[in-house]
Image (cartoon, rainbow, N blue to C red):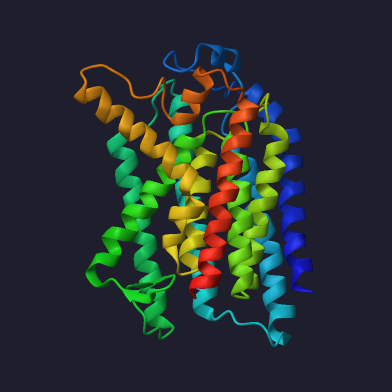
Length: 345
């Protein structure tokens, strides 16, 4: 029976996102909120000049609407009478705080897109401004999680679950490690948004694996949230698959990074981001390695272009092939994460 509510969240998020596309994309075109393609990218990307951006608003609305409608109904009318209902008020608090964190990251992305599109500053917010805002959000989220644990009488403060090791108390290191992990993953997801459909399809599969893990722990509320993520990504993919009719912009990519982190922390197992988020991390590492190698060799390049999806583009891979191969890698690492969690707890 609980599967019906998860499916309801998927369908509602999908339908809302897809329908919003019919209205929002023409409106963005009317406002001339088009993507500016920089000369440093692949030359053939110039054909995408002017494609509407900030489309992430579509799936943000779809996901949040699905959660706001389905989650309270399940908690009030189904969960209360369900003997298998194991989610505590603390778990519910983590879900809500996670959604708020994702929305805050989406707001930073919206500000960045607004500066690029409306103020005509191609680079948007300065790197230092972004990092200050991103770390502020991460630290604020972690402090609120800590206070929630304290209020609801949790005894495992400043700790995390690691497969095969159980619960590990990180003490004073919990805040810096967790905040760096969140900001790093949010930016990794942001860097992955470079070709049509890539970020959307990867996050779609990430949502599926988080749903499998949440289902293993019988966390139906969190499964409903993952259902909304899956439905929202699928609805947006209808407009974002090659050739894309709209881009998500930083509005969408930073929100997706935030929601991925929120799911992992709601499970109290952020370490699984290393596996489920492996493709995102590889994208980010390719940029870091490119910069380091460029400086050490005084101008030579390790990759033809970074992030690494552009390297494969320069090697002649189509955008569809890149999406297919990268999603295959996501599926491999995702199944590995699920197996690790199930066998290690």
